[in-house]
Amino acid sequence: MEDVKIDYIRKHWPLKGAPDRNYVDKIVECNFRELLKYRVLSGDSILEKHLTSKSKSTYISPRVQNDLINCCKQIITLQILKEVKDSKFYSVVFDETTDISHVSQMSLILRYIINGVVQENFISFINCHAYTYSIQEDTDNNIYEPKLTGDILGNTVIKILKEFSLNPDYCVGVGTDGCSVMVSSIRGAVKTIQSIAKNAVHCPCANHALNLAISKSSTVQCIRNNVGLLKEIISFFNMSSKRNFVLKTVLNGKPHLKSLCETRWVERHDSIMIFKASIPQIIEALTNISEWSEQDSSSKAKILLTAMCTCEFIISIEILSNLLSVTAPISKILQGTDNDVLAAFDCIQDVISILENKRTQCEKVFQQLFEDSSLLMKDLDIEIKTPRLSKHQINRSNHQSKSTEE
Image (tube, rainbow, N blue to C red; front, side, top):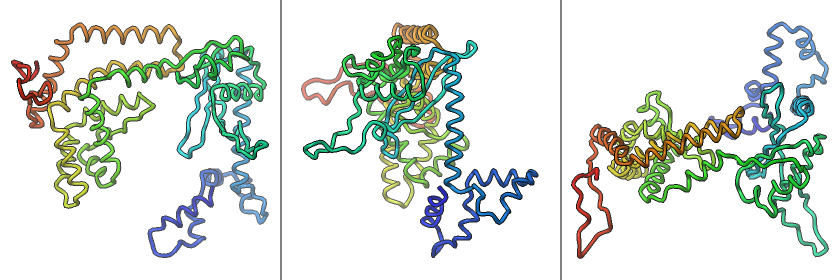
């Protein structure tokens, strides 16, 4: 670990020539050694004598540190397994995804009850390919294709439970998302686990289902287009430290823009809410950047500014944030560890009731949204313009309306 830090410092050294090794040793101190120093400064004379002795066996090398981390891991794992066995019955929550280093990782969580309190504890990360496959060759000298099908993932979970000496008969629940690899009735991971753990009931992630429902619900073209524009604006600021600095300056302590995460819908809620609340500051930042002498930044800022300062964009963001303000709380509630099926059902019913009420009184709701949008556009000096309701017509005009709101 220290060698990696040393290489990083030498690679990014701002001055000419590589830094001296002794200087690097002074500035590179891992958390472990810093904690030891803190302990010595606090008056631990025994530790100080050990570290200052002439013996080479000080046991603070990177290898020893990794051994200590493994010891901590084993102690924590044993404590969790002891609680699970005392509780007797447990549920398994797992998911598989590819991390930033392109390694297929499965996270495994055990859910159980201790003294009437629900406990959810992370138990293991599994490198699925390394755990399941080794590079083998068959009789024709062809390398096996390392697929990760549902039955392979299910068998991996069963093997891990047996390695932890957990009886599959006491597994009463399996929690996954709703993808086909997990829930397929033929080769799904849940089906494979249930073939061994006969008492396990599948409980799909309600929040994941909510995310998918929201992401696929809008077929309105202007909403999709304006969400794409919102992504472009956020990416424009995040890809440059200079642009980011300008935005932070005009935000003046307000929450910074968040990228629209494709998988974590809670963050997508927050991203749109923060963007909507910061529209005046974003327009100010884009205006400032559009006046730069740098051609790429200024031209792109001018394009984004022109696209953003439209009646359609402002109203679309206002509508989108209004609807997402209804689903944002339940998206957070459904991820709580203390909720059960009945509590989740009540929350979902409340959201459905609110959305049905909005649909029933759609004209009144839109009237309020249009008024709020009009006030914002008036402050930003954006023209409230009536859009065309259809494409360019040669033989007839568009449908006549009495007002822009209509």
